[in-house]
Length: 141
Figure 1 (cartoon, rainbow, N blue to C red):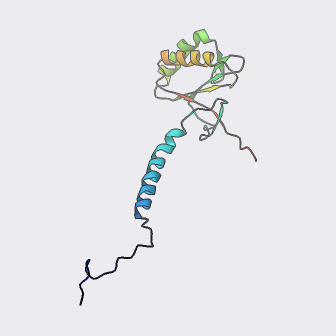
Figure 2 (figure 1 turned 120 degrees about the vertical axis):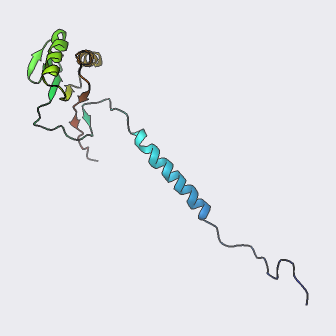
Figure 3 (figure 1 turned 180 degrees about the horizontal axis):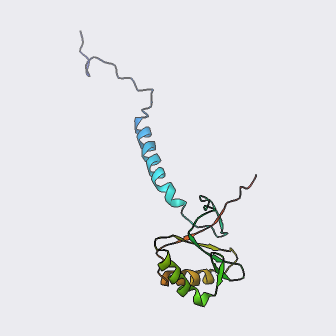
């Protein structure tokens, strides 16, 4: 009897591929993509006010600042000159503390004018200013 090296087994090449390391790598990549994907979608569309958001409630007692395409500013439904907006907002904020303030701006209004309105709101003591947009229109293929 001749003794074979290797414990008496014949070492034939494996004809199967071990997929366990491949599955491990794929799971790690899946986790990485799941964590990074939400951060990739945080850009603001240029053609506002059409974005995908939850609809603004129709009936609310929150204060709404509206900027029209003709650069007119309205608080709720009252027209307010930009020069008096800060003082008017300050009075409204002190009369209704804790209420949210929202801003609707026409998409054709120059960005600089919208920033002036936002600055007046900040100076008036508005703690947070939400932007109101229209729901995005579904484009058919």
